[in-house]
Each structure stands twice: as C-alpha cells, then as structure tokens.
Image 1 (cartoon, chains in turn red, purple):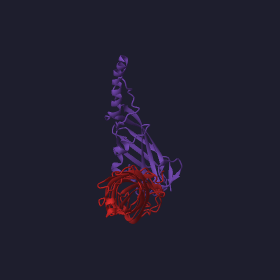
Image 2 (spheres, rainbow over the protein chains, first blue to last red):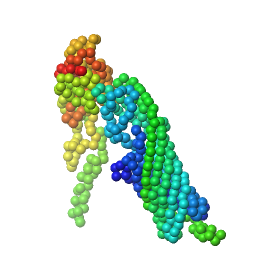
Image 3 (cartoon, rainbow over the protein chains, first blue to last red):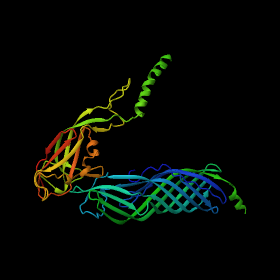
Image 4 (cartoon, rainbow over the protein chains, first blue to last red):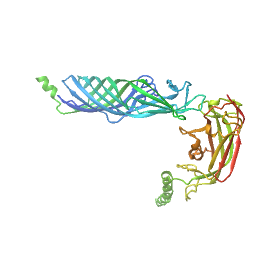
Length: 253
Length: 198
C-alpha cells in the first residue's frame, strides 16, 4: 500500500448529455499509482494518489453511440522527497553532503485536472459500457523547496533552495478507461469505472546553494522530468434527466 | 433515580475542570534558572551531528567546542490550585518560557597555544568561532543571543552551546580556554583538553 497505493477519498464524475438525453452522475473510489512512486523527478516527486475535492464532469452525447466529455477534478497531490537518496550536482563544494533536514520532506499541493475526450456508448438490456479516451492538462503547484545541508568533514552549513520555472506546472494528461453502468430504473443507474492516466512534463528547476556563514551563493539550472501514472477505480451512480424516449423517437425516424 | 441525579450533579464540577484543563491553555509563568557550573568539551563535527571527542586529534575543518552549563532552578512556575485536579504539571500543554536570572555578559575563547601569526598564545580568538542553531550562524556580536543561551534548555535543564571553529588554525596543537562573565560579576573559566587539529 505504501508504494503508491494511497487512499483516494473520492473521485467524482458526472455527465450530462444534452443532445438526446441528459444525465448526471458521480463516482467515488480509489486511485493508485502505477510503479514505485508517482513522479520520477530528482527533487520534485509528486504522488498522484491524492484526496480529491469536488470533481465535476460534463458530457455531451453526439448520437446514440458517441459522445464527448469534459471534466474538472480538484484535489491534493503529495510531493515527497527521500532526501538522503538525492544525488545532486554540487556547484559549490565537492564533498558529499550530510543532510540536516528530515529524510522525508512532503507537502500537499492543490491540483486541477482538466480533461476533454470521447466515449463510446454500448447498451445491452440494462447494462451500458462506455470506453473513454480523454486528454488534457494536470495542473500541479510546485513551490520552492528549501533544505539545510551540512558539508561532510567541515563546519559549513548550506541553504539549498530549488525553484521550478513556474509555481504552476501544466502536465500533459491522457486518460483511458471503461465505465460500466447497470440501470436500476429508467432514470437511475449504478456505475463502476476504471481509468488509467498518464501525465508528463519536463520543466526547468533552478538551484541556489548558499553558504550560510559566508553568504556566498552559487546556482545552476537543470531539468526535471515528471512522469505520473495512475489507475482510478470507482463506484457511483448516474441519474438521467431530460427526455428518456429520445432513442425510440430516433428509431422511429 | 434520585441518587443517580445527586451523583451526576456532584460530578459536574469535576467534568468542568477536566474540560477547562484540556482546553484552557494560558501561557504559564516563566521557568527561571541560574547558570551554575560550566563544562567544556572538544567537538568533532565531521558527521551529521557534532559529537564530543576524547581523542587527541580531529579534523581542523570540523572542530568545535561544546559548552555545557548546569543550571539551578530559581523560580518554579506557580500553578493554579484546584480542588479536583492535581497541581502537577506533568502534562502541561504549554511549556513555560525559560528565563536566565544571571545573564551572560561576555564570552571569550582564549587560545592557549599560538593560533596563527596574528593570534599568539593567550589571544582572544572568539571571532573565529560561530554557533549554528536553527538554520543560522551566530557569530561575533550575536553569539550571546538569547536564542542560544536562553531557550535551548534540554530536559535535564542543561544549557548546551556548540561553538564551531570557522577558521583553520595555523598550527595543529591547540587548546582553548572559555571565559564567561555574568552580569552579576561572577566569572567561569574552563579549559578544553589539548588536541591536534589536523
């Protein structure tokens, strides 16, 4: 569970179809990281197993099979660093660092997922199957990170500050999955959804190392690669609103 | 039924005190202490944490002096008396501030041997030392900052300050005398063990 299988409090999606029928629904469940950790950056390691706030999705069904969906999900993403394992180039000194900070530094940052894509609707009796493919942007906050380091075999302490190119990182996001629904009545369905998501971004990070005794600064810029993979599993419901017999009208035509 | 009501009402003041004890956390009166005795040790700061060393040599780039003061309790914070709750402060949610009654007026580190060309035996080399505490160095005029000597009491009520040598000495054999003068005129002097700084 530790390696990415963190709890996702709620994943809520809703969809409204405007063309021939309208529906609204939501899904709650878990999201798991795929792989050992969410991010693969040197300094900024984002863990995508996050607690969501109030995600909302809108869908428009183009015909009785295809539809488009747009959603927004607001959540919290964990940023953690196993400091002792950081292998960073040292612009000011050659000796390896002894880290005075805690081994694990973690923060929670607000995140926003904005996705747009298509789904294909297959209905058999009371069952519905919706394969989905969505793409969009995963917005992560990445504040500056400050560590205090001690140089080995000396009395020198350093402030090590990392600043991303911008405080808000826009990761490219692509998601694919399947939504399965079981109609309990003409307007109400229970749904289950599984979605795989991949987000990625390369961004510049500036590092400033300051000798706290002499106040001498040295800096460098390097590139961080963030790769986030996750699987979201959830159960929810769907409420149809609007005209229900639109499909029958279309068949008659 | 009547007995139950009597018991319930009799327990209400106790319940109220428990709630007040948990929630009402006023700033307690200060814990006042006096610096008593001083001990000095050679320090090896080559690793993550500085350690007292009894060896006769250490790295000159990571040398330091640890000054330990034992303290005497000068005043115990007064505790509000309570009818039900024990007056012990075993679980006080707000730790009291620590005030030293005898303030350190000056701190000097004197080299017993020649430190460098400009600082021969008996010279004041305090300027070459600095303390690192809470992500900042305290050197020269700030070395007597109250944060260093006023608030870093440990659980045994000992004050401990590490002074790190920031300038490498010219000769390896070194020994230092720490001289402390308090505002009431009292002086403490202690000398470190001789050590080779290589």
